[in-house]
Length: 441
Image (tube, rainbow, N blue to C red; front, side, top):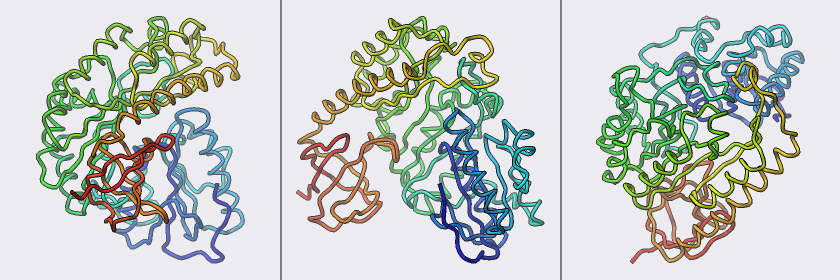
């Protein structure tokens, strides 16, 4: 939480606070560009807000995220009452989902916007929205990588998920529009692109009447200056296998795939409405690993979904041990209003049991990740340098996405440039991270 404010507000200064996922971050970056085009000075996630205007971009996905968003709004609403800021606006998923309730309960907010009508914020301030800059952003990540949102919405019907309620049907951006954005970002110095959508693998079906993610990745890969492309949030059902040769053959497509599986037991997959069974999932994972050697798979698993028995959970643990995912995150089921689960199931597992299962799952994965890390010792890997710390440089391999995956910690025997690539020999491990030294031979 932000607890300190500037003693005086700066006129024409806007502070934008982003909560939730990287897709929200892209929206904030687009909004920041519009503010700058209208003569405002903009800061993102400042430690000490000092602007006369604050915009909070909220998350409304699960209970904990909603609570964080509400608390942030309430904090700035109090600042608004005390005249520490002049204007407070709220946008994003939470206000898309609970617009009327928020308007009634937090009247200190000057105006609430949803996830898609935030462009009105500019005109409501008496300024002009610049359509010619609609794809331009103020990048808030380090200057060498950016998130690239290729679509909005989701057509899946998973039992627990509120995203389709919030965002609506899947809507792909055109390949041309995306590639034009990439070219512009490359000209700004961006080398690494994290492709994001609620479901990458569905990309293009609405526009081109066929799964088109492979074609999109090829087109981006051909753009001069694109060093790394990393793929986030694939879906296992109807996985477009023509993507695999692209990942294998293109050197600037990272051998990395984030594919959320959620569970393994057929009983749970059916209750979750995932439209896939365990055997098909295993076949797909084997095919991916066979066609893209050395690929690192990131997945997400859920525990505590209604109806999850002890046998289902043991099945999940055995599956994780068998498949040995290089990266795995876990979370507990959150009963969300309007979802299929909320309407049709009883949230029948106690919170203590949910978190006990999560702890056990992550303990299993911790051991797997440690063993996989040990296999990298002695290897020389291509590493991009993200930042400099007092005692080391921190970088990542193609197998590591920023913010969520391990880092490579490099001693400071040599002067390194942030955003440059170096060959790094792995000399050891430290928790989830790798230890390395520059290989100049």
